[in-house]
Amino acid sequence: MTPRINAITLGVSDLERALAFYRDGLGLDTAGIIGTEFERGAGAPGGAVAMFTLDNGVLLSLYARTDLALDAEIEVARVAGSPISLGWFVENRADVDRVLEQAERAGGTIVRAGAERPWGIYAGYFADPDEHLWEVVYFLAG
Image (cartoon, rainbow, N blue to C red; front, side, top):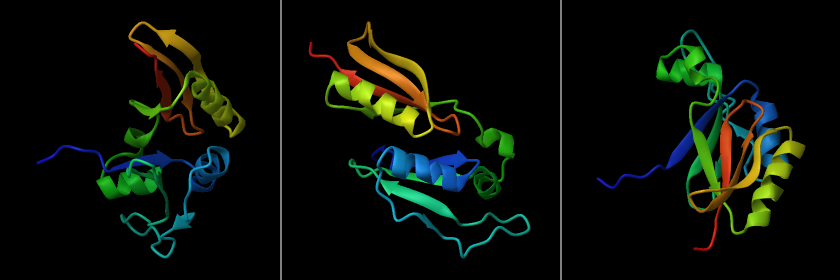
């Protein structure tokens, strides 16, 4: 078995708002919300989802928290907040600040401004409107 992550699904409280943040605000490419023909029913999740194929082939999906919880058969509270951070590696130091500013303009929150860190990176954090935490990282030349 070769370990790899192929897809990341973020549970969101408002699918349209999340779509606007990632598509319109951050510029990620998507066909928009699909799967709307699969409606939520008694104990069954709906199918509405927005998907983005990232440059490295990883699929980023946005899925309503309620539907994600129903699909996984867990409480909705387990799909809230950000117990992890997602890493976004960029090509230069200025890109860190540019992405943070772009995220803020799109409706996100800068959690930590870009700063040099002792382990050889320049990085900062933003949170999307659902408080999913992203670290934007530039690896300093060694």
